Length: 171
Image (cartoon, rainbow, N blue to C red):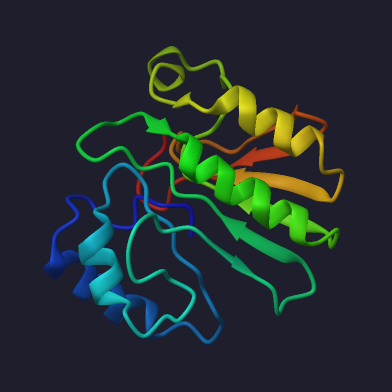
């Protein structure tokens, strides 16, 4: 799930989310969006072993037919996203570990989508280096994002990138 899991990042919201998601008969993986908060999310889903116990909520899932890499673009208190050097170094190391087909998940898109107000709130830091990393690893099959609340598909950095629509409202 590509972020904005709740509206205000409060523990009670994550408790409600957990109750809703418990009904799913399939595995799911979570990343934060700009409406989320790392610690309450981490605490509510502490039994999800893939979530790091501290720091950024980034992880790789290796036991699926496709390798899943989740990136944390959250900037607390802001609507735009960022990938600092630490997060991008982590990604570079993960991409270097395997040439398996890989999907990258992140909340904020690293490219403009053509909706002015949302373009101002995309990934504002780290996009160029992210594009270089993706271009340099032909096994990245797709970059999947949320945030914009519209279904949009583009060629980006030598692969496909998709924005997911919202389950709540469309922009």
